[in-house]
Image (cartoon, rainbow, N blue to C red; front, side, top):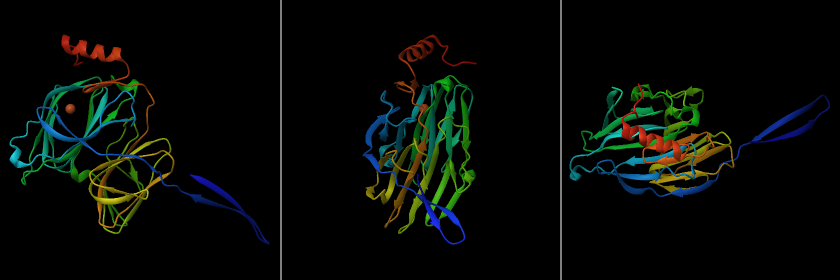
Length: 301
Ligand code: FE2
């Protein structure tokens, strides 16, 4: 934010007028999601994936489940697999995900629900998508990194049902706020190391949203329906927009209507060593993780 102080002289007083000039973040680049097959044969659109270069710190991965046409037959899902050192955030718009883990947790992530799972030192879980009545499955999974000090923390779940997610209506925008703050309203997911913003934004035709973003935070927008102008650039769905850290806010305008996930978080600026479903800080920690899996000591009491 740029602050100009203007000295204002009159007969009776001298006042300081502060003019706030907010600047839009420009777009760094736009990622076209790539088709990948994961789990036991689930087709996904993947925008970002864990890499040692850690380009989107603190975010590691973003997957979009949107290809489960009923003609494709049964959904195979993601049978039992481990995680360590990360958080997985599952948000379903259509269909559900049946979930259970090695610690005895189980449940169903329903339409509109969010599961924010902090794997910490480790869980083994399965995630099995189920079709909606219309036959569709539509949702997202985001991976958020954990800082070194929390990578071996106790696993934790924040299960958020659709009806407890605040919906903020503002100037043609309908915002479902999972984590972060909008006009004094806080999302239900809290105490996350990356201080994340995670919200589903639907802009009506002819509307505009301006949202302030802290300096130094990584900001992404996953545009999954319609078209909009992001910082003056026309963006069509489906695209992941990565913003530069050169401004104080993001501005989105739309003529025809647009829907996107707005995601932001504070980077940890630590080295990372990703390996499959694990993201640790060093190769040695990954080797230790694989050794524990082989020896049956991965899950800690
Ligand atoms: Fe998983």
